[in-house]
Length: 265
Ligand code: 48F
Image (cartoon, rainbow, N blue to C red; front, top):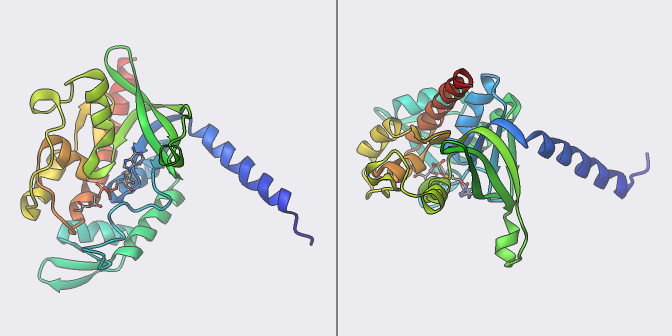
């Protein structure tokens, strides 16, 4: 067989565009393919929900591959270990109740299972704005290639429609900030704004992240570190159980929000 460069180029362009067009009308759109966003995507896709994830970086995983201070290990507690077991990520007990996993195995396995479950992940694309319609409800995301702002180019974005959005953009909680900047202090938090994360306290951060995984604005759910940043809870450093559990919870909060939307229409 002769290899033709143009056939390769056509294969890439055509199949990418097909998936991108498909992603323009989804049930759930997730900003950020860190541990929380990918875990949310995995459980949503497993439940048959049409889900897409947009990730700014070239690579997925957010803060997970870097482990603790670039030592590529993560620690999870008992509940987090059960979730890593579900993904079939190997863990080893370090001391009673503390489990270690390889951060690269965790990242690559969760990513692979999320895609195989049916969620689409688009890397190198940033969420730069949102769409809000009707009675104050987020209805979509506004996207641009991540390289555009890096190059300082003036290029207008494109938009996709989603019934529910998950802000899994980590510490920066970018989608929630966009809502506050453009719509006002309307988040379901103290004062309606992003409260901001508190100093590191792993015990409290890991507990509160689950309670903080809520719908903070109609159609917008927070997951992972964004949940603690928006609701004003501590960061927790390289213990990742809370991120995975929050991602899983966000999937089911999103499913509930989809059901409520359906019954209100
Ligand atoms: O930061 P990140 O890993 O968030 P997470 O899933 O997990 C937090 C932990 O990694 C760690 C921690 C553990 O205790 O505190 O920090 O909550 O992943 C967030 C992803 O979102 C991407 C970003 O590149 C990262 O991969 N992201 C951020 N803003 C945008 C975005 C945006 N506007 N559009 C698209 N992706």
